[in-house]
Length: 490
Image 1: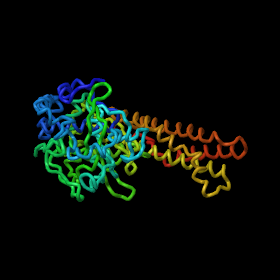
Image 2: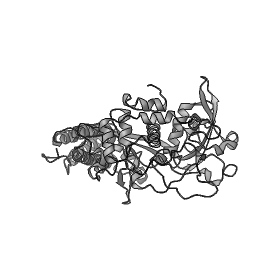
Image 3: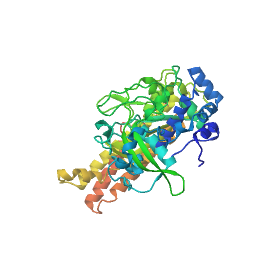
Image 4: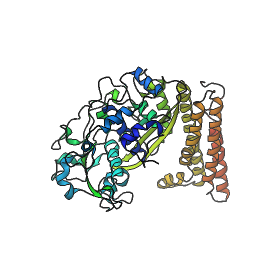
């Protein structure tokens, strides 16, 4: 891995495969930052036709780098006293008294900005290197979960500063179109905005923002530079010299940031929509129990049902067939104020193959759901024989003994992605779907056998084993979504 400055990265964007950070969320936050710089510098396509030219001609991003190098250094300084980059200098009088260790800046290290989490205490004495603090700062602005901040509302800027709203991407899945190089990735995601880029948010005090005495109404976004550099938190970091002699951070204060009005469609161009259990439609949300690949059909539906040139999916569908794209989906699963895990997955996209990819994703998901239902019924059969007189309170734990659905979902991810790779090719899908279904059936039988291995070697155990495996075989053959003939799109 090579470390480069922002300007150097833009200058060599087509020599780099990607930018990377320790977590998917930090990596997305870095990409958001580079997009904001490109928009603020005027280095972006203004029309759909120009976007096509940028992609096919690999328009250099050196103008953005040149613009950045011409900016006053103090305006991009993390530790500038008057206007620290990405931070709120109004917190300065309170930092020494109310600040905590830098662990609270790292989403993965602290659950609610107050408690132990991931073995990092808020008063952990180790400073955080400036580069790591910068990435964590970007991730907080982009993905910070809601809840209560550690900061005092009475003694600092006002009571509402303790109320942390979920930040812009904190509750939905962000989809990034990835190309062969980092330059390709930036160009793919630089949507045309003919009305201008808006304001890049360098620091809290560069313009009038919300106060913290009363809850404000959300403000509208004024352009893509504003969107991608939004200050979702009020943050101030205290600089120190680290053990290696480099700049670091040893104290941090975090409070509420900006509130946005509901975003219009132009600012949600990557959003994939799904239906909730209550029947409502909303931007696809991350889940700890439902892997992203199970929602791949919604992503491909966004491409297949797009309106030409009006969003990310409409544009990538118009690319030449020899310009495949990878769609990278990232989300943060949080329970109230606690960050649980990052979820991310990648999906192939080939212009002109969206119908085949959608069919493969939809059918593949149905087959996986069918196999899961069969395993559930097989587990129920084993439970009924193994526990003829169960106590109601024990049923859940007893059933779980034979339920292999968790292992099934984990084992299905790789076959599903293999199926998508087949669909991205130029052949018919029937054979690929049959092979996928066969793999899932074989795996389900193996997983159930492993679950049943704990049965005692007696007549009841043998009977439970036999009836459960027979039930699984019978159920797998019923209402099977796998194709029986050549019935899938090429």
